[in-house]
Image 1 (cartoon, rainbow, N blue to C red):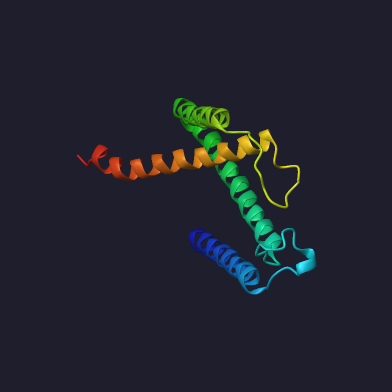
Image 2: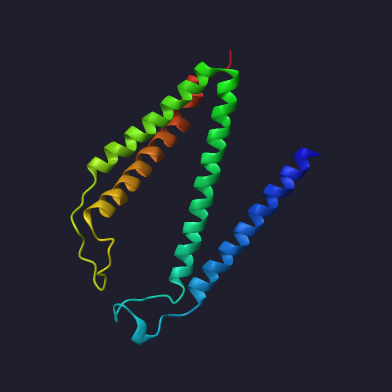
Amino acid sequence: MAVTKIHRTSKTTLLIGVVVSILVMALFYLGGQTPAQDKIVADLSQPKYTDIVLYWSYILLAITVVVLIGFAISAFLKQLKESPKKALSGFLVLIGLAAMLFITFAMGNGTPLNIPGYSGPDNVAGVLKMTDMWLFSCYIMLTLTVLAILVMPFVTRKK
């Protein structure tokens, strides 16, 4: 019974997310262009509903992060009760992740960009270094994932 309810809930959540995403993207692609008098740069394409796409992306990211952190904390607490040594080894992964974020932030470039028509507060060294941090971290995590996919079948053989 519980599995059916979990399956139904996850299926409904996925369906709602996909439908809203399709509607937002349809609005973005089919919603037309910003009027000429409201454009930031006159000769660039500027879809009217860009803000909605960005806000929907922020909402999806926030939901993902909150759920991920919630599951990580609950799994850590459960593991701490059952096997404290394994739980602390999982904690080392979080320390490694924090170290990776610190190193990639240090690698980032904080030189302000020349962005036509933009004079907002986000073109400063801190934000640019943080953006580089996330990009470099994504590259590292993607590389590690591909390596794990390629290497793990050879490492974990059935006995």
